[in-house]
Image (cartoon, one colour):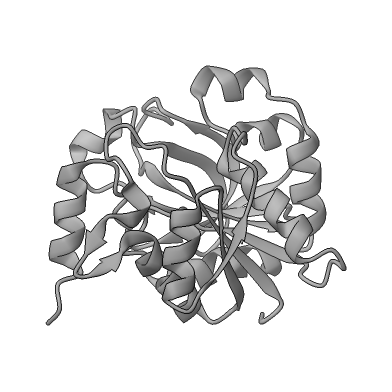
Length: 245
């Protein structure tokens, strides 16, 4: 799938970890680590979408491509859509992948899995990934978003809901949603044109907008959760995980 377009939205406005995208991890800015992992997925062009000249400069200094976007976007999806419209006006890339810019330990295979889930079924609009929760404390943690779905094949669910609550109830696994998405081009266009939806606003989960509009989201089940860096403690853990051998 060399015709996929991977977008990494990135901005400087982080309150818990100032200048987060440029945080140093063994001499390399965090956003460059994410860009490198996306390049290693080897499924298409990789571009960082940002409103920050400093982020763009860091990516370009590492040999990557950055696309400047407006600073007034409310979320990363709107940011990547602006970038896609500028980067691919001829619509040569039918698949768009949104990889969060604060996942420096993301394994390239997870990005490939996300795209594989999308392309496996023509009726799927959006795909994402999740991992079975193994840590008991995560089951009730509202910061751990749960993907709720019905099995449709090996390691694959059709999403029914996403929630910060502990769901579903009863015996059985719970799945930690990993915030990475692959879109068909037309699905991304439809999604960004939709107004915010009631459950989206209540749960503060953007993907519920798609489900409320009747769009199909499939979930690939993977065996690991990449570290999301939000705090100084997360950054120190990322440094340990990415320490040279």
